[in-house]
Length: 195
Image (cartoon, rainbow, N blue to C red; front, side):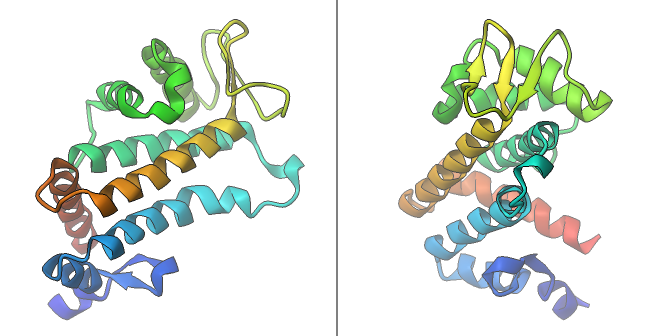
């Protein structure tokens, strides 16, 4: 049974990176490979599927924002070393925007984003309080006055954040909080694979 668990694939784009691979990388302090794993895990699930759609008419801003919200919550759980974000999602979003300088345009709007974008899209499949989602090139990342978010630009900014997170993992010492939190979250990820 233990051998079967170690074969569970955590990331397909890394030639089927498994729990055993992760455990080996931890033992060997292979920061570069673990950082690459988390980057590719998020990229293959949340970034590449939308980049692969060639027909721009088939890309939907609401889908992009729903995926972005899932990605934010998952990334922040790695950042903080949380096994679960149940009952603290609002705090997670507030915390994320406080250190994600790629999305600094949303400073002061974190709570509005959480209630009107994240909760609106994920719970009711719509935005709230007059907020709109666009993919038009002429719309900036955030038009505060008209309450418009450019989903394509938001998604790109999240990709930049993911790249920065990877670089921080590669450069920080394994005793740093970023690594301690990453490994705490990975314990939960692996535990969830076994259930």
